[in-house]
Image 1: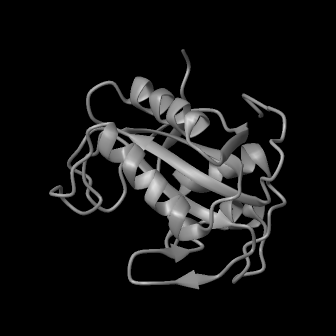
Image 2: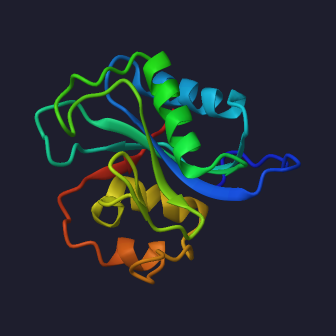
Length: 176
């Protein structure tokens, strides 16, 4: 389901998908502020947003459930520039880097896809390396574009979600 669809700014040439998550403080408000910051960021235009989902933590289980969503953007930023913009938005939201890996966070913004680019640097891996095993990423991605094809696995988001083997990742649509 598309929550928001807006026009295309001139000069924006790249398509990317960004995951949004929070489980500290007021997670829904944190995610909304993250969306607003994305809309306000230089060189980024929000195209579509998924529903919000309440999701069970994965890997580090001793923490509150998350609120998660995925957005599609258009941008003229290159991948590293976009990554740096996302990290700045997280920092401005109060995120610190001294937390537990996969642990609680005020705001988490990850590049899931950047067109069909495959990239691996010390700081950034695209497509996101664990997205194919994450119901909290795949379900919102299917809201936006279930036929989107993973550039390495050559499977659609729908196929990845339907064949997800870890059934323990509980997820439910967040209702206002």
